[in-house]
Length: 84
Image (cartoon, rainbow, N blue to C red; front, side):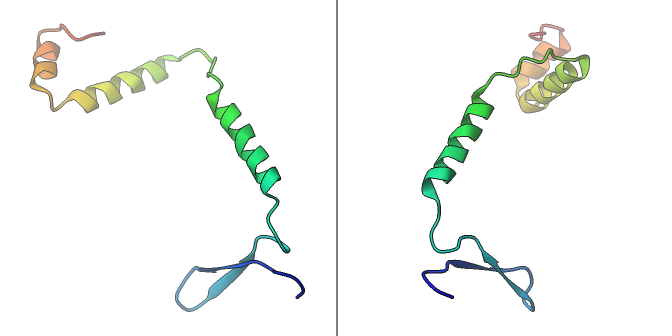
């Protein structure tokens, strides 16, 4: 092998190591940065899909589970003064 071949050794189990070659001689840093920026833009875009009844129910369930330890929340829930 010529050049600075970069190899990464990953062990899947103690008995059989696996070698992954992730570049020929050096990483294409500009391409990697561009890929990361594209992913960031994708995840920063707002989700414009309308919420379904299941989405709202799941969000309410998570909200209740998150606040279940609060005595104030339990009191408000008991008397029907919850925020929804």
